[in-house]
Length: 203
Image 1: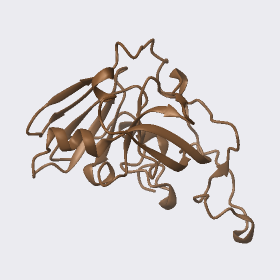
Image 2: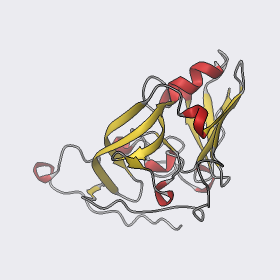
Image 3: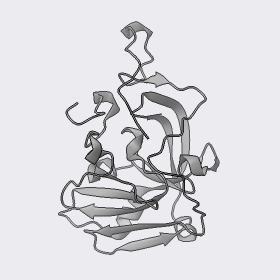
């Protein structure tokens, strides 16, 4: 996928929806499909989620095991670095806090690399993944998450640009340092806060 700086211009302040971060537009009913990789043929029976690295107990959950954990979800807005925003979405799954509580990160842990079943990676501070800020989601709008949008399950970190919300999530490697992922090695911002327009390195 090629991403350019062809973002929409800023509207006058009195015309902008206050839910829109700078440089974003309302995608309405559409949800664009953007991926760095080909959509995998991944079934729930093949899906697993693992937490490893600097944790007291490395853990792997199957689809069935993940579904026995307490359910949680996100309702709100999401924002893509390519400039679209989508309001009032509903994701269902399990809070990432639940998985991390079971794995028990070491006190020295500060960051994580989230990785997909396809090999895609992205880096995140643990502070962006804990405290009810991130989910492993397999439902969207009350329906199973479709493969094009990351099904059977994806990471959802809605307060950051959506390239951080890894599709086809396979695991989380907990670290004591920041380690850039795929897009971060190719010029994207290390964190990706939409409200600060952290799109590219140096923004």
